[in-house]
Image (cartoon, rainbow, N blue to C red; front, top):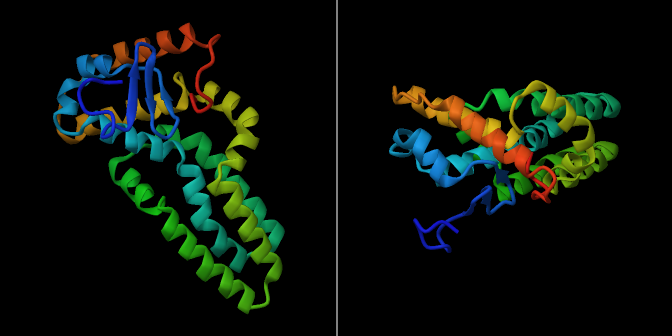
Length: 219
């Protein structure tokens, strides 16, 4: 546990092998390494906030599809709606690690609240039921469960993870955190000359502990 703040206030654990967030996400870089390589960035955005944003963006495919599914069910046949939602999920999962923007991640964070999502589904599923589209209601409720409880992420990991590893040099969570650090640096016109070193340290930590039991959300 980091000694910088009281553990009850700090939503991550800093270990010699990397950082574990409260959401169970594993980042293969330590707090000290981020401070050494991107200390100026942390003067503008705290590591705690960067990790929160990264966690949100890692799960952004679920959030995007969850909000997009009801309009698809309203406007498309069931098979087209289901197929389009699945295609959107796969496409976003593969492309989003390259696209972590500061405005976009704030927007995704706003859409990621379970109460807002629950109210949205109560309203939209009620509208579909009132229109007699009971099959769409069933698909919508099933989609909500699969997305909200990470069932689709779990079921698709054996297909998506190998593809993500071919597309990106780092594990997805680390790729996103690195991208957010760079975005903050660009916004504030900061120099981050050690990005290559951050990447090397992440890869060293990742490859050095692949044979150990990393947490299940390490990629």
